[in-house]
Length: 78
Image (cartoon, rainbow, N blue to C red; front, side, top):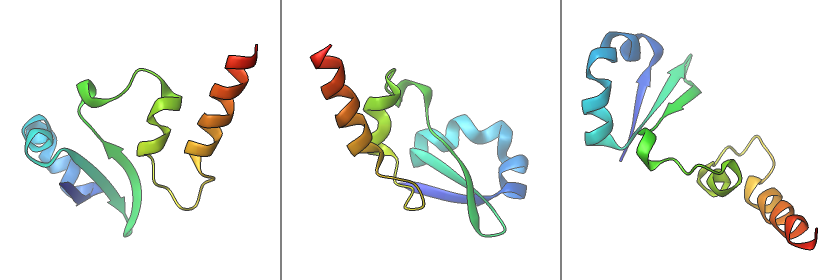
């Protein structure tokens, strides 16, 4: 379950962030009610940035999953 914290709350909770990540799975830090960054446990992150593209859901950016599929197809042709 995703937890949303203000930047101020995040700074105050820094000592407890590892426990919070175990409980919540991910934390999205907000500044002025807009997402600033996302914190996820290291072991749950894929080593290949292109494989992680499906997990990113930023509607202000192009669809990263489509970009990843094109790159993987091009890699297979070379």
